[in-house]
Length: 176
Image 1 (cartoon, helix red, strand yellow):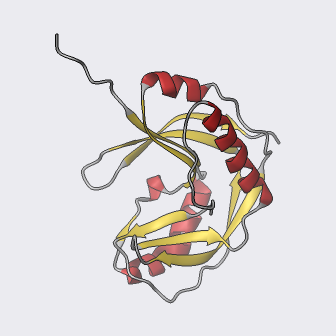
Image 2 (cartoon, rainbow, N blue to C red; image 1 turned 180 degrees about the horizontal axis):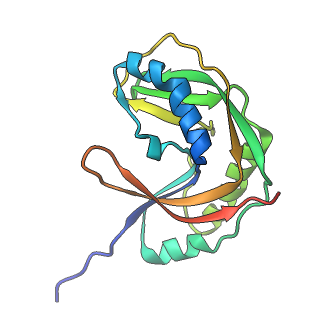
């Protein structure tokens, strides 16, 4: 009998911006992205990853959906820093100082995911938005872009013709 291969979906938890925040981020970074010569991240894909789980089975996905939302409460991040990772050639935007609530949210989320058998990322967490890939470093400033964080999103990454297509599977409001 032929063995069937279980379907796996590429899943991550993220902070997903509202449309006003998304537009503000695009406006504030458009010139830097253009000067970087890189491939701009589609506006619809802008987000802050909290936990990338990678390929997961339906059984794991169902377990992940029921881990409960960490109680970080709503908060605001201000993106005021542009950066570049030379090795991966990624242009990014980040808060100069990460709010304690975002790092607490990431840590608590990973504590719950590790209890389900997922492996925590070994690098220190740094919230950022990927602006462009295959980019070159640019000397540019970023005027502050406030990002009110009100919910946590569970997202699936699907292959697309030019870039991945992200589908928000579920959202959970952060307490007021």
